[in-house]
Image (cartoon, rainbow, N blue to C red; front, top):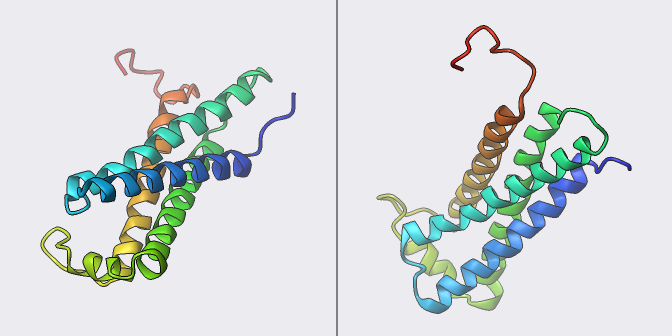
Length: 158
């Protein structure tokens, strides 16, 4: 059984997370919840889920070969899923605001983001940065759970 490439896994789950976030975006806009910061922030759960699934796929491909899951590729997958997923999602928001609903750019600009108003490109940049951070930190936490290198053998309570 050939191993699945880190890039392939990252791209696949990054695209899946973007699709899920776009569907979520369309649903919250259709229901009129787009003004809630908490509900908008909820889209990041799809990045977290996608990273968990992506690292699970990496782990399965290495377990099938009787090898330990490599740490750095696992971190890379988390970063890639977060970056690609949130980048595609931000691109869709930009496309939506320019072509599908031109008035939406003004809505985004006039929304209050944690006490300040940001230009559209800064809003989209913050979406990408936050999504990348969520993906990278999720990957980091999961890879720590899979780490069997024995770096903490001295403390039985660890």
